[in-house]
Image (cartoon, rainbow, N blue to C red):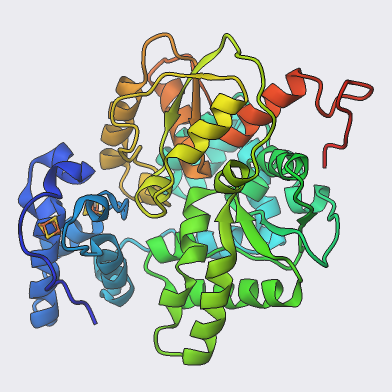
Length: 418
Ligand code: SF4
Ligand code: SF4
């Protein structure tokens, strides 16, 4: 049941909201959406297409929740509305593709292949022909991979140190299929920090993309599989490197509000979830000499707004020797937001353009700790003619330690990659 009554209409959230900033419309603001949700809850029969559009334009970025004095969970409420909304009100045309590609290693292998094929002109034309409604933004997004070829799934490449302790590495879906190297680097840094790593093959999608699309039942099924996998292990923590996955894993209890047995298990699971950047803040790596390279940081919404993670990437990258130049509005959404960049291409592009505009002149490296943001900003750089490489903070840190001889055969520090 949707309850938007906590809002006191103070308006403090308005300037935090990217869709309000882009349109200037009250109905595209958190406060406006809460009014619409309240009306909707009162008169569910009086469905109206414009109201649905304004609600569905929400990115679920949670920026409004960060500034709200009344702690109104607007992003959650819109997510809940999406789950309960009439199918005609929410764009769910991507769901068959999500079902096919996201979740099982079989589907992820196809996602990885699509990522590779999208770089071949004839294959791009074929993709546009088979799925015309999403192909243009999807193929455009794949431009983010022009300098990067996805390798084999990380879950098949990573070895476990032990299953009787250590940390369970959650490899994710897009991270596993597209950015497998980031998972390999995450395992290497965790080991360097003294944390043995366990990578269970049975782990599944966190369910974030399904939740974004209002498919709570499917997200719940994935959650149950992941909870069972964790319970069968002896890991003392579940470590995740994708901001979106981390938020979803930490919020599993909300998927089981009406099932006390599963809720209890979900609470235990969520309490064990930790972001890798926070783990590396609590178990710091050695300080490295200052590098000449200046970088900037994009703060993923599901890090900064949903998990209040802001200092951790800065701590890791400073320790690794990078000079950080802050970008304006680093905590503003880049327009990726799950599958939003495919279903709401126009709004997504506006936000992306603002993000690129805010990257300081002369900076050629952007750190971003979410696969959706990495792909989105990298693709934007290609479209808007900006020389940039977008990398996860873990990738940049790995590179810095490698440059100092860590992991190199016969180097001063030696060691294993994965
Ligand atoms: S959602 Fe929060 S910040 Fe926004 S108007 Fe309501 S009470 Fe104020
Ligand atoms: S979640 Fe983001 S897009 Fe949605 S209302 Fe809040 S600030 Fe606006």
